[in-house]
Image (cartoon, rainbow, N blue to C red; front, side, top):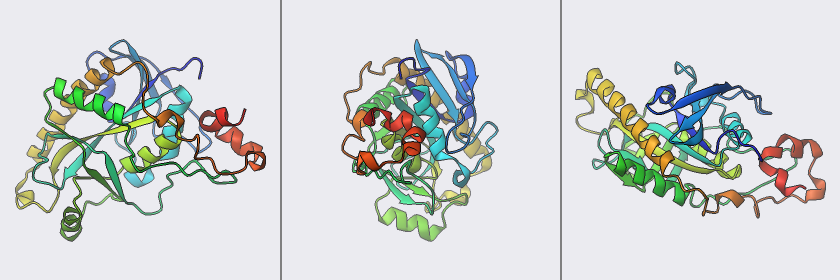
Length: 289
């Protein structure tokens, strides 16, 4: 894109729109071939950089994890010219070492969702992206440094298990996930990561620990007031982390995310339906010129 509205995308709660230092300029409504995104994108400036915010669950938290239009959300980011996505997500901890108020930057995902669409491809165009390392290493390093600059206790590395929801785990499930070596549990980020890779967008999850999952002996003793306090502090910490990450974001990408489709498009180009090329033009256009 020659004139991008934003190079950096941020997916998270709507409270980020009012974070200190962010100057909102306009809302952008994007129609995608996959339907509407969760909400309008808020375009503005933060630390001298153009950024695009999207409320994952819509403002007012109106969409459950299973209802999210993941393809539309990522397609919209691509349309805006976004090259990097910082994704903030509240998670439960599956290890004693990941305490409430800690942030975890996972480098792996494990899928426990059912029937969610997590690819742009099909309908005559087949692509098989490499997903062995699903998180951008350059962006992960930036996020880790931002957490340390904001004095947030952070662990880089680990596995995010993505469950269907919206109900939380049973104790049996929670203990099984722990026996598998999983680190944190959430309901949204795997699909975002897969689609971002297909769209050749760098992606990182900043997982904000709100509680120990139901496996923990003290789980039933936690009161609502404690949870609210953690959520509020995590939100305040997230604003600081995002500001540091945006401010210190490298000017150039040195990772392989920007050419993820170079060897992934399998279908004979002469046989790909024109309407599919047009539908996916922001994503595959450069490969069909």
